[in-house]
Image (cartoon, rainbow, N blue to C red; front, top):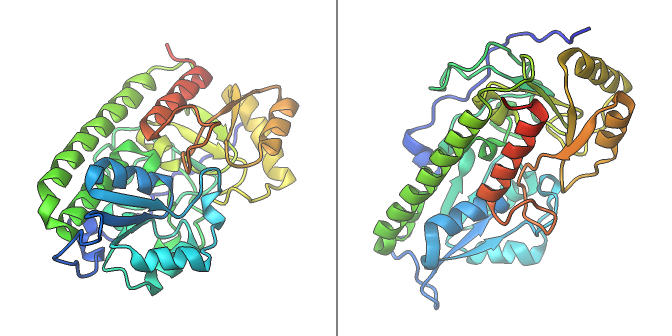
Length: 333
């Protein structure tokens, strides 16, 4: 028995203005005017930190609000971090992922506030996503399998915040961040521009590796993979895969007994070999499902933070590890 998949168009937000720069507040012309001469950037969690460091280079000092190993979705902002926020020149965050961060940044007096979600198109994803590209997406050649969007409870009309796991969308965000830093610190604009171009080139290369690596697999359509929570919707759509999540967009969500049973049946019908779990949340449910269904387990990292358990030292390395894990699970030809 196969689980039916209905084709429902993805909900994208109204088109952002060019690179969403209207999301920025008025920027200081003096830019990096602190005693160390660097632009103080506060990043909400690792994918934002990575962008700030790669693009800002030696001209920025980056503080990450989310500690390594901390699950970012439920982050609280204590008084000390609120103080750090107030002293920063730039806040780089992803609205809808961390409600406490959204509120703290909204209430802060930071001059430049960059919402990564405004720099690319957002979509709604539920527990199942796959193979259907957004109508605004240039890559509309991917398969015809659809998904049912159940939404996320915070903002952007219930959109899925995990845009950084699609290298193409992440590159769009990188370009917007680069423009923001140029505007906030015009004295070093040429460096930010150069570093942005270099990072976008790296992300283009990563996208090409995923396209080539997942093109030909032994797995029958719809190329299903099972994860603990629905973090890989954008990645699935980009490369014509179908993600089936045990829980929804919230990594702490508890699946129903019916959901687990449906996944077991679907895994058998679709030839699924592997249940993926993450490094920052409990692997108990994934391992129980895998054991009951006679499946293997492996790590698919949503890269919400880099720890000693991460399969790589930075975003690119961990994404390449994710690619290898997917290739192994789907059986590349």
